[in-house]
Image 1: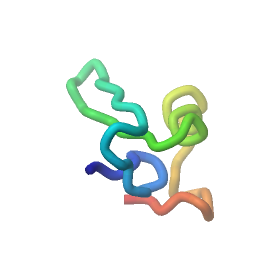
Image 2: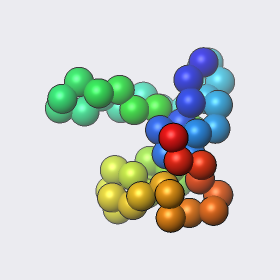
Image 3: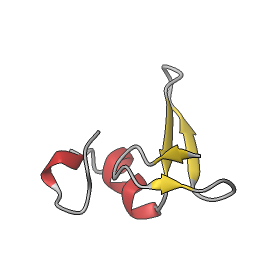
Length: 54
């Protein structure tokens, strides 16, 4: 079980999405909302009330 890289919610086994970056860093996302905000839009999770920054 891992935590979402954007909102810090738990990602249950068999759900979510794992993305591996060019540097080899592994990112876990629980929802498409989190993935888009981080990967495509480049947003900072500290600026959102619904996301708890790590």
